[in-house]
Length: 167
Ligand code: QAP
Ligand code: CO
Image (spheres, rainbow, N blue to C red):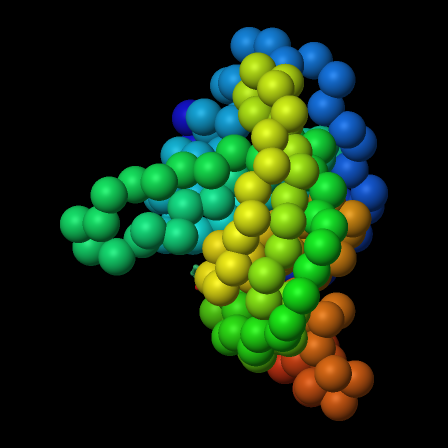
């Protein structure tokens, strides 16, 4: 089932999400619907608060090129540690449609999380997947990529968004 994606400046996007405690059918349905919604919108990442669920959950699939094999990652209750290096990437967001800007993030990270069955997992990530993980993890803390821009670019972004947004 396709879910509605909340868009900027919806205040729900700025709230803190809660840890998942039950790894049940309800969670699995949410994960399945999030993946379907992300693929349908041609996104490479989607976090639960973007679809109105304040839960520490996100999905990522960076293999979006035509014909590329799908590789879906599901992250529940993630914590990022051991960041190193830096990478600047032109980011967008399904909740900020039609807008993109360069954001500087860690180049390599370690992420500890749980899978859909509650089993603890660890992943070392670098490059685009590391960028996507940091971007989606920010959503769980109510942070949007426009909040990660340099102060000058952030002011320009907010001006531009204020013009394009229909309230
Ligand atoms: C986050 O972003 C991300 O404006 C996921 O018109 C961004 O999927 C991770 C999208 C960059 C890593 C690098 C945005 C689709 C999708 C738009 C997205 C749009 C259509 C953004
Ligand atoms: Co986003």
